[in-house]
Length: 80
Image (tube, rainbow, N blue to C red; front, side):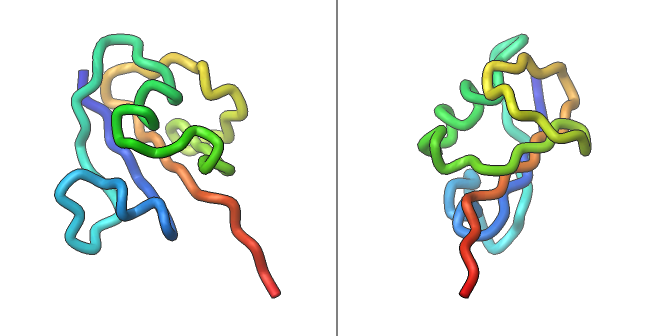
């Protein structure tokens, strides 16, 4: 199945063939979880702080995804 992955801030470097874009179409096995996608992209699961699936907050990284989902991920963000 194919999902759209949107990565923000320092996570953008994990996008396949990233050229400054923030999103990519990624092929994953049927019913892959959020954690499966992060692992496939080489993103340490602990780095994913804020996760949205189809625009809705998702705290369970074991959540299964459906074909066509949009997965958006932000890292921990600090301020000063």
